[in-house]
Image 1: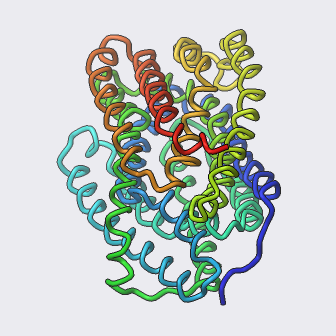
Image 2: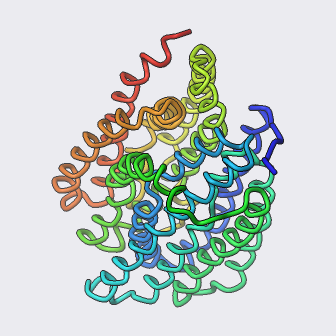
Length: 413
C-alpha cells in the first residue's frame, strides 16, 4: 500500500528541526563530559578514525541521500513504484558497501597507523555495514519526519545515559566509540522494520540499473565535497597527529550543530522542491528558496557575532582546559556561517532537486582541487587552523559557483 499521508511544509520543517536538535544537541550534552574524561589526544584519535570511517561511508552511499529523497518523493503515491525505488536503491547501496568493506579491511591490515588501532577500525567496519540499513532517505522522501524524530529521541536518549554510565576514564575510549555503533545498530534495526512495512523489498537487477548513473553522478559531488570536509581531518591526523585533530574536532563540534540547522531545513524542503521541479512550477521553487534564505540571514548574523566575541568561552565551556588550540580554528570558521548555509540550500534544495547533477559535479570538482592544493600547502605548517582555512575557502567557492548556477532556475519569479 502506498504511503499517502501528506504533511504540510511547516510541519516537516518543525519536525526536521527537532530531529536536528536531537541528533546534535544530545551529543553536545555528552561532549563536555567526554572531552574532559578522555582528553584531547583520545578525542583526536576518535576524530581521526571516525573521519576515515565516515569517508568510506560516503563512498558506499555515493549520491543515495539526495537521490533517495528525490526518487521516493516522486514515487510515493504508487505502491509498486515505491517498492521498486526502495528495492533498487537499497540493493545498489549494499553492493557498493561490500566493496568498500573489503578495501577498508585491507587498509586496516596494511597501514601502520590503522593497524595500531584495528579494534576501532573493526567497529568502524560494523558502522559501515549497518549504515546501509539506516535508509533515512526513504523516510525523508515520504516526509515521515514525525517518525524519524520520535525514534531518534528514544535511541539518542538511551545513548546519552549509556555514555555517563560506562565511560569513566581515558581507558574507555574504545567503549565510547562502541556506543556510537550501538546507536547506528538500533536505528538501522527499527528503520528497516518500519520501511519494509511501508514498501516491501525485492532484489532485482532491473531495479538497480535505472539508478546506477545518478547514484554515482550525485556521489561524485558527495565524495569531492568530503575531500575538504571529512578527508581533511584524515590528512590532518596523518600529518599533524591526534592532538591537532582534537583541536579541530572541538572547533567544528559546535559549528556542525549550526550547519545541521541548514541541513534540516534543506532536507525538509527538498521533497517539496523535487515535486515542484517535476511539475515545472519554478515560480514556487523561487519563492520557497527566498524564504529559506531570509531565515538563514536572520539566524546567521547574531550567531556569527556571538561566535567571534565568545570563542574562548565557548571552547572552555565545551571542552575545558587543554583545548585552547581550538579557539583560532573556531574564529576562522564562524564568520562563514551564512555562506555555508546558503551553499547547502542552493546545492541540495535548488540544483539537486532540479536534477542539475552535472552542474553540481563541476562546481565540486573545482572546490576539491582547491582543497587538495590548500591541504598540501597549509595543513603541514598550520595544523588545525590550516584545516579550518581549507574548509572555509572551499565552501565559499562552492557557494559562489552554486549561486551562479542557480540563477537560471530561480529567475522565474
